Image (cartoon, rainbow, N blue to C red; front, top):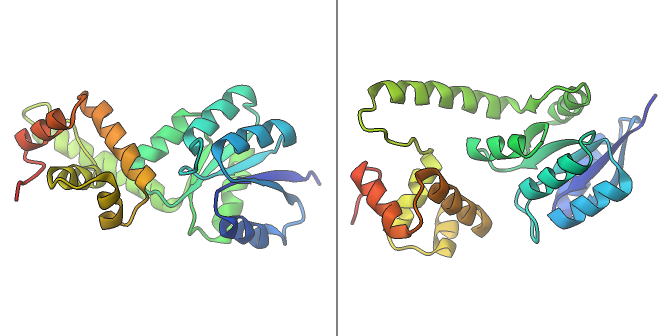
Length: 219
C-alpha cells in the first residue's frame, strides 16, 4: 500500500495537532511536516515533496494563495487543498485559479477530510459540501440578479457589502476586523478585491460607486 505523504501549512499548532490526531488511524497517511507561513510551505514542499498539502489561506509572510501558485507552478503533481475558515466564494475561486485542487473548511469532519484526499489524488477537484451549496446558490442568485439589472451593476457578496458599509462609517481596517469577527488580513484582502472588482483606485471612488447603486447608507 502506497504511503500518502501529507504536509500541513497553518500557523496554528492546534490545527496541525487536530489533523494529525484525526488521520493517524489511517496507516496509509503520513503527516511529514508543518509549515507556519506561506514561504515555509513553499520551501518544505520543495524539500519533502508531499502528495497532499493542506494549505491555510491567511498566514504571515506569504499567504496560502500565493504559496499555492508557486508550488503549483514548480511541482504540479502536489495536490493542494485549501483548509480554511473562510467561506466566501471569492477565496474558493482564487485558490482554484492559483492551482489548488480543492477547498475544505476547518470544521469539516474526518470523513470529509478522507473524501477530499482520495478525490484529489484521483485527479479530480474537491469542494466541501457547504462550499458547493453556497456556490450553486450564488450562481442562481447572480443569474436572477442579471435578469433584473438595468445598469451594469457589478454584483458584490454579502460580506463585501458589509465591508463597504463599514468603510462608509469611517471605520479603520482594524475596527472592521473586530466588528465582523474576522482577521485584519481578511479585511485587507476584501478591500483589495473590491478595488480590483470595481476598477477603482481610491476609497472615494469606491464609496461613490456604492452610493450610486444603493449599496450603502450614510448615518
